[in-house]
Every structure is written in C-alpha cells, then in structure tokens.
Image (tube, rainbow, N blue to C red; front, side, top):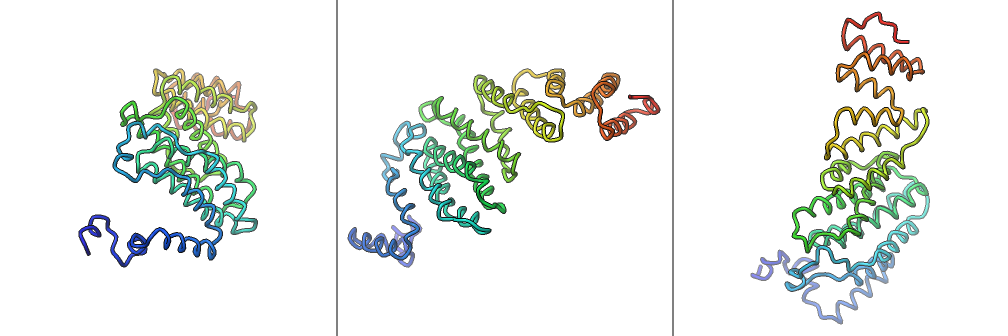
Length: 317
C-alpha cells in the first residue's frame, strides 16, 4: 500500500480506490450503466448532485458553516415522498420505505460530522416530519419508528452541540425554533406510537433558553385534554411529567408540581404525590372529593394503609 493509500485508508483493490483512478468520462459511463441497471437510485443521485459538499480545506474551515443552511428542505421532502411511493402497499412496505429513507438520514449524519449543523437539522427534521405525516398510511412493524428514532437522535445531537460552538457557528433563532418544533413532534409521536428511545424531554430541558421554555410550555398546555377518561389521563400524565422536567430548570417548588397535577385533573396522581410528601390529610381530602371510580378508591385505600398504620380503618369516602 502506498503512502497515499495509507493516508486515505483506500487500497487499489477497493471500489473507491479503483474509481479514483478513472477519468471523468469513464466515471460518467459507469454512472450511466449503474442507472440503467438500478433506476431506483436515480432520485438519490439527483439529491447527492445537488448537495454542496465541503471537500476542500478552505470549505472545511469556512467560518459560520455551522449555522449556514445551503440545503433546500424541499429536496429532502421529494426524496421522502418518493421513498413512500416506491414502497407501495402490503406488509413489507414499511421495510421498503425505511430502506430508501436510510441514505437520507445518513446524509444528515454526514453534515453533522462536517460540522454543518443547520444542514443536518434540515435533513433530520424533514425526514421526520414527512415520515410522521405518512405513518398511518402504512403498516409499520418497527422499521419506520426506528428511522424516526435515528432522526430524533440526530436532532438531539444538533441541540446538544450548540452550547459547545462559538457564537458564529451556532444555529440562529429561527433554526432553533424549527429544531425544537421537530423534537416536540417526535416526542408526541413517541408517546402515541412508541419507538423513540432518546431522551427528548431531557435534551429540551437542558438546552432550551428561558424564552424557548415558555414557548414549549405553551405548546404543551395546548396539548392537554379535558375530561376524566383513561385516554385523557394517560395523555395528560406524560404532558405534566414533561412540564415538571422543563420547569425544574427554573425555580419550581413541590407545591408548584402539585398544582400542575390538580390543574389538569390528575387527582389519583395528586394523592400519590401528597402521600409521598407525608401530607396524608390532604391526600385523603382529595380522595374523598375527586376519586369516584371504585378501583381508584381501592387503590388509594391500599396506598394509605401502606403509608402508615395510623390510617388503617379510616373512612375515606
């Protein structure tokens, strides 16, 4: 292996090593033959042609490349739509769509590795948004939710990295808003369908500015459902947990937390929190007035007994 090959890690026997020896005309001929044999890769080739790839040392050191967006989101959007179109219908459609989406978020990963965070964000957010929009039209056995999990991880990396960058490389306000919006959409998807393992709530709580936290809080409160049915309780419980985590970054007392549970009508959760804080009298009063389902009353009686023997035999209804 020559010194050049050792430096690049590409030997003459690899495909890439051989391609580097070809002339422009030979490469174009090879590409033409490849497209004839595999016409489905043509949209991806078109996308790659349109990307502004940083290949020179000057471009790699270009100031402000972290916040400069050179990629049009519609370019990625078209490729996602084609991926679902080519996937068709049937039980294997999700696998086919995921296979075509993988090269797209890999492009996002490439931008991230190059420090082009604005472009990386565009790729991850666009793939995620368009996939969520079409998710219910296709039977998924985990392949598409895995793609969304990868996009979520990429967006969290974009957010995590911002505090380590010099100001001229950080995303601007508009880009940060778009990033947070994408993370919130992924959080909502994860609780409705599953498959998002990355800690989106923790990332937002760690890095959102005071103004951004207020915006996230407004969005979360708009997602709260009224009513005392199981579905509303299940949804609101996750929202309150998010709110508590978010506002814990500020001055948020135990009393504030209890108020959040009371505000959305999560009375069962409220009694549990009161018992955990040794406030059995208040928990009992809430149970008397708000717990109406027999199963909830029985559950509370068991919790009350476990919290202290002095409450055994007490009438809670």
